[in-house]
Picture 1 (cartoon, each protein chain N blue to C red):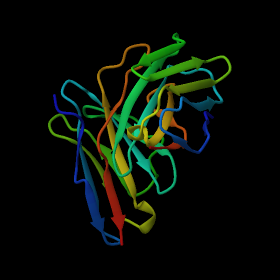
Picture 2: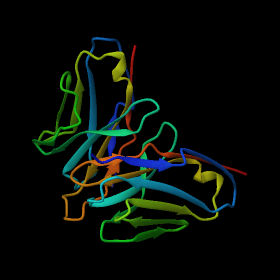
Picture 3: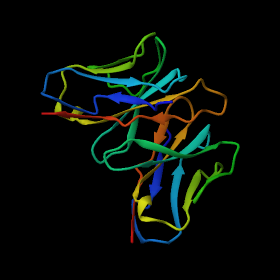
Picture 4: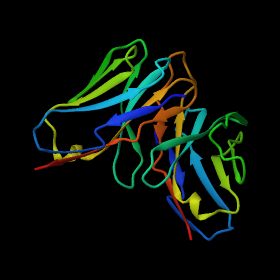
Length: 116
Length: 110
C-alpha cells in the first residue's frame, strides 16, 4: 500500500507564473489536507477536502490559491501569479473516514516550491 | 485560538541519554494529539497518536503522555541514538485540522 504521493517534489517558478501541486492520498483514504511550511516556521493548515467537496478552507489565502479534489484523480493545490513569499514546502496529508476520536493523518514527502 | 508551544527549541545530547520533549497547548478541547518526526528536507512521520480519552501511548523506545486538563504532553525517548536526530513536532486536533507546534530540533551525537 503506497503512502501519500506528491509531485513534483521540487518546483521552480518565476514570479507571475502558476504552480500546480498534486497529491494522491493513500488507498482507501477519502480525506485530504494541505499544509504549508514557510522557512523557519511551523506547519500551518491550509485546506481540508473530501472528494468533490471543500470542507474547510479557513487557512487558505484569500487570493491566488485554490484547491480541488475531483472524483477521479489527485488533489490539486493551485497557486496563481506566484510571488516570492509563496516559496515554502507544501505538504499533503490523507486520512480514512473520520471516527469520533479523530484519525491519524499520513503525510506525503512534500513539494518544495521556489519562486525566483 | 489554539496555540501549541514546544520546549526546548533545540537539544543536543550524547548517545544513550533518556530525553523528555515538552508540548503545551492552550485549549484543552481536543480530539487527539500526535507526535511527528521530520527529517531535513523530508516529510513527516507519525510516531504516536493519543486520543483525548487516553493518557499515554508507547511504541518501542518512545512513550508519549497526555494531560489534557493542564494542556500538556511529553514525549519520552529512552536510550537515545544518533538515528533519533530530527525535528520532533507535536500537533493537536480539534476539528479537521492539525495545529502544530514549532518543534524541537534534536541532535544525538555518538
